[in-house]
Picture: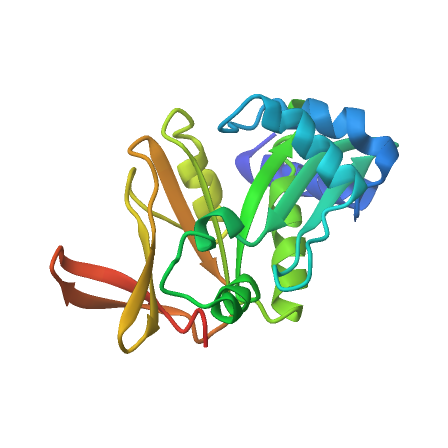
Length: 226
């Protein structure tokens, strides 16, 4: 079989898998399968795995004023083979002392973070992660969100190209994300030295501009909170 034939065969196989997979919201009965998928996610604390599996499969909604938490699973042959959970980065925004409660609520309605994304080893190579990210992007864009962010550890270097293929801009290890907020202030989302952040616009007006600061010339994400 020639290269072109192998390419066509691979594309046909991917389309066949895509047709066999359903992207849907999780059910409580999915908890054990979601727990297994989340075991591969690099959480800050091991206890987060079980807690996240229960949250994802039972109720990801947030109190009023805190934005929207949502989750999706990929199901194939009655088995959950992928999961994505997203929510506004509330732990970060809670420490933005310069913002009023109303302004924090506005941030939570414009900025969302990938909390967890995992695909079963047996289902990899068929762009299920891409489909889950696309679903999240479409849903959050419809809700008025302007940017989706995420992070992962330097111990998983293969994720750099993985997320770049999904349309994310991947930063250097330890590099913060800096947001223009208004004419007098900027918001910075830091990360530990062994962490890598990424972002993907959900609105066409979101873009990068470089500004001179006390730390040098830094990229600012513009129009995220417009």
